[in-house]
Length: 260
Length: 260
Image (cartoon, rainbow over all chains, first blue to last red; front, side, top):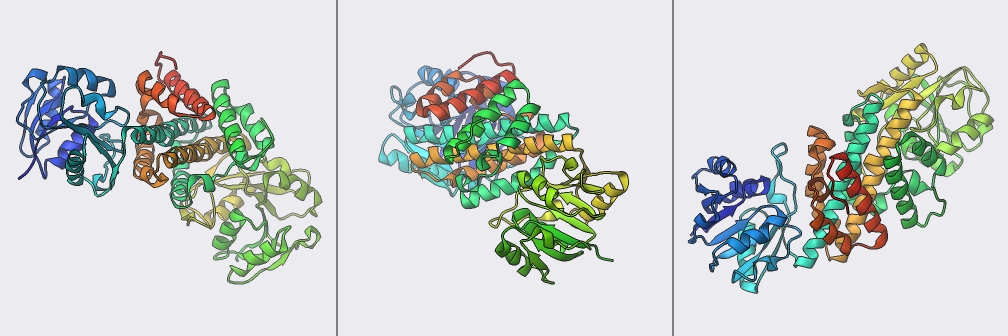
């Protein structure tokens, strides 16, 4: 029998999960504080579920409740919700599963390590899902739920999940910001970010193959202080500060002594 | 008639360029301070060129000399070389083309914006080559030379090239270092860098499609100080310093006021 699921949230993560789950589960209801968002998501599903923006109207007969809203909004929502004996999971990388423990009996986490947006298609079957359950049976249920979406399921407790999340901030959010800095530097010289794409693709492939620590290159890795000084002259003070700190950290990492 | 080329250097860049050029040019000679490296490169080419580790033995009858050695070694090499009227180019992102001007008449730069290593194959036809010539005719010759290798040729003076190089340091070298930091954080939690690869691929695709500045996500972009504080608790002091500086820079960029 298909599990009956309520999706709480209508953002990018909720949308991607609801779409893929609707193939093998019954989506009973979509809740969003913004009714239009809930309706927009509902309309994308084959069997259009009911929608609500009223917490009190969340149906009680579902098997699974997936809470996919902003991190800081999870606790306030759980506080307001009626307790029941269904399975409750959230999809956050940084919120402990105990956010449910005062209210619910069977709960856990289903954290997909991926960024979801309207602009880029994602093959969800390859996305790693990190799961955690309030007991062994619950964990098994969450694993079964995750397996409806992906082949790549890993168990991670709240502490491990926090590490994964902070690692993702470094690897993705911060890298992306460095790309934005690079884009700005290029644009000031009359070039587009595009010129960096072939280099970035190879750099990422290499990191995946030989590990980023082994694949490190560049002036700091070589201790090439001449190039680093010339680069620093070109940068505004904020950007120079980032250049200096990251170069120093690379040199420290590889026991290179010259300082900039 | 095929141009006759001398390759000065036998590192990764020299090797990749020599291999692709050997299809449409005659590689006369490979010079390297390390004779074994020169021989190793020569042996990979169809018509094995002569090799030398003696600057005085560099042949004088070539049409083109490609200097592909460490940045700081270019000037000392040029100082020792006999002047001639052939075309001289180096492949460095950060050395001005005037490094040749005291000695040579026809010179310039042929800078491939790519990282070359033994581990990862590169489709050189897609690599952007940034070129610069000492005069218009020379620039045309360098453009013709570049076109033997790639379809993606752009003109950049030494100042622009310096910008491109520093942009590449941010986009690739520094990102790679952040991936190395992420790898370490993951390993301490019992996971491999691999778990981040699907997320990284999508993040990079998105940066290429909508520009990195538009695609920025994460706790700093949201001004989510709760998550940032929890992350900082987890990090050693050096890594926390990087986390703090990059988060502050992101918040500043997007006019988000809370500070960490």
